[in-house]
Image (cartoon, rainbow, N blue to C red; front, side):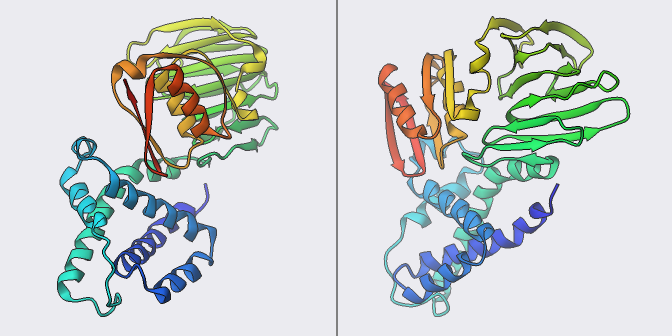
Length: 339
């Protein structure tokens, strides 16, 4: 892992401070120029500020019935009220009166609490991962034995090579593996309670909150539950196995080899997949949040091929076929509701 995670907190604190300055004096050209100078210093500054600004906007525009569902709703409500109050002020940040200072300090604390709920899991993931990708980012990693891992957007893995076996944990998202043959050291991919063991093959693994799926493009793999202690299937090319995380049930199906990990070509290929799963996939490639309202709508089935390079357009096409509506509350927040 890199040391980037350790540097995130100080940069995020600076980003909070800049956001508060802009909110206190939205028309102050000097403040804006100073912010632009800080942003130009590094990509880390720019990415961190965008994430903080995004959460500010989400909190300011989120309808009350959504806010009530968020943990720490009191802090979020306070943040939402503060972020809506954006009237121009004639005085600068340093000349603000004590009441405004207290209000901004409270808003900053509320924003920090809100961001902690959102970003803490991401920070924990960052600390555990050896390789990870961000929104809309695809990455190819070559491991020490020559095996290759393709990571989808919003995905993470941890790697441990020992004397007897090669272990990779899929911590989030999905990956496609091209494994170099090594009979003496099996290659094992773990996704939660599911373990996939191979010696040399090409296959994809996807982990979501509800399920883990494995699809084989070439060679064969063994899929086991209970952390590898209970073998449930041996898959051949063109076969896919989906494991329900909650029930432990498995479902086997055929899949065209060329459609396995189609996300490597920015394609999303689904055949009767739940809308919730499709939205989750598109969300990895969308610079914002997508909210899907209603269990009935989430369970509706979707079939088609969609362009991951244009997730909003893909959502619009899906919404039309599902007799649903998509509302853009901000450029960063899309809400899909059933009719």
